[in-house]
Amino acid sequence: MYSGFKIINSYFLVYLFLPLLNHIFFMTDEHFTVYYIADIYSGKFFIFLILFFIFFILMRVIFNLPKTNKIGKFERFFSDFYKIINHNKVIISLFLLILILVLFDRNMSSYRYSGSISNLGSNIYIIMIIKSFIQVMLLWLLFYILDRKNIIGIKTKVSLFFLLYAWMYSASGVGDIFIGGIFFLVLLFPKIMSDVMTNNEESKSIFSSFIKNIYTFIFFIVVLYAALIFGESIKGGTGFYLLIEAVEFNPFWLYERMVEGVSSHYYSIIQFFDGYAQNRLLDYKNPISYPLETFLYRLSLIMGFDEVSRPLLSSISHLNFMVLSDYQSAIAGTSPGPVASFLFLFSSPLAMFVSLFYLALTIKIIDNFFCFKNKSLTLIGSLIILNQVIGLLQSPIDFLLIFDGGFTFFFIFVLFSLANKSYYKLNFKPQ
Image 1 (cartoon, rainbow, N blue to C red):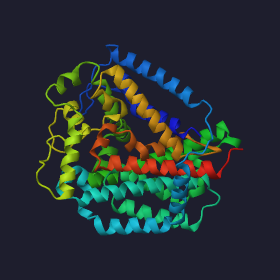
Image 2 (image 1 turned 120 degrees about the vertical axis):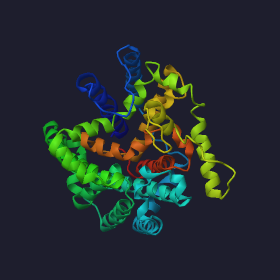
Image 3 (image 1 turned 45 degrees about the vertical axis):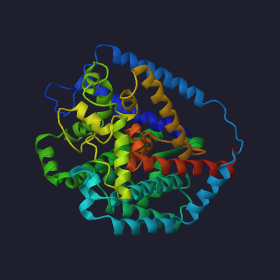
């Protein structure tokens, strides 16, 4: 229940408040980052932040208003879609695994870091679509397992195994390894993971929830640490050397790496409140033109045309990296998050309301996908799922790329969200 709000609240906790507190209380002059860190003490940022959360709280009140149970005209269609996926999940999972084994070259594993994906030809876009479908299918099976932990059949376990194999075979970074680790635990210990990630609304104990979160947090850190090491090995072949260096010289390496890793959305927001971003953007075109130009280029590449040249800047994320850092790169990108994305296009008051509207839409989509009837997500459950749906929040404007993992994940996730909501609405009447 209220899964969307819990996951978005977890997003604010991790991607905004943790970096903000780190910036105010723990950041020293020796802190190393490639990003510009704006001055936040002028007051403009805090006024924006306070107003943003006042309207966000009002939005939550509106969401809690009574809703109608009337059956919509398309809900039977999406309910049938759910039934088709559920009935054929093993075949679909095996088909996706075969596609990955055939199309994914192991040399592609570092494509996100070693060069432009456009240089890999149209095959990479097909792989991105398949990966998005696999990720959504994994999340769909996760919801199925969390919601029905006592009636998990062999078909569900076999489907999860096929999808997990395909996901790990095509892993391309820290995030992929971490997601794979979580689903490996789900495959081995489905009932335990269900207990860890959800609370039963009918028998919820604050103490048991607290103890559950403490134990799970330890496992969460272990899996994340392993993911960072293996991910760094994929990224630059230095993972285990990095581990030795971290243990010998900097025991707080994991904390620093985690905070810096989730701070880009925060850095992206505050750069607009001391005039830095506005001054840098004077040297660039209208930001929305970059994803549109890249869409046309990728479309021409897929269609086999040579008339459209590759843009020098490919996306809002790419532009954000160029603006936020002192480095020039043909491929690097920094996700601005759902607030800063719209600050690139609008003044701060308008950007606030557009981002709130987008967050309201995202909350609704997540609520429909994880439409628990008598359960709610724990803090750990919210954080785990946030890690896997973060693509919805990285750079919404870049969905205009169309031929991109972000848009394909969003599109497929929405389809499954409508399917889940429709099926549960038609087949599980409220008590």
